[in-house]
Length: 95
Image 1 (cartoon, one colour):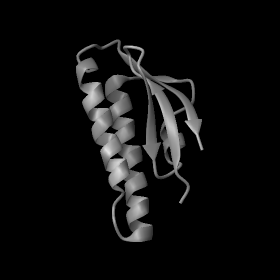
Image 2 (cartoon, one colour):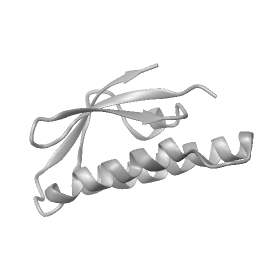
Image 3 (cartoon, one colour):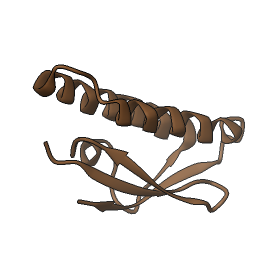
Image 4 (cartoon, helix red, strand yellow):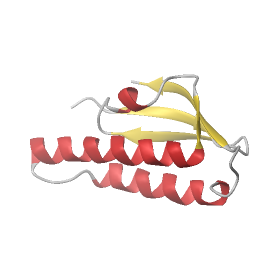
């Protein structure tokens, strides 16, 4: 199963490299696009859940790394959720 990383920039300018055990991330994000924080979290939740489910279907267990990444995104996003204009940019995909 091909894994990938995707680099994002939080509203405060902090860059972060995120992990996905599947290329499904490319179905939810576009390189160079920015998303309202709540939308970014929702898309991440959907994509990483699908990715983890794919791992489970193939190997018989969920992907703890995908679940950990989602938890990290949710935690990092929390301070920005009250700011309607805050956006997260998907900078690049790393295969």
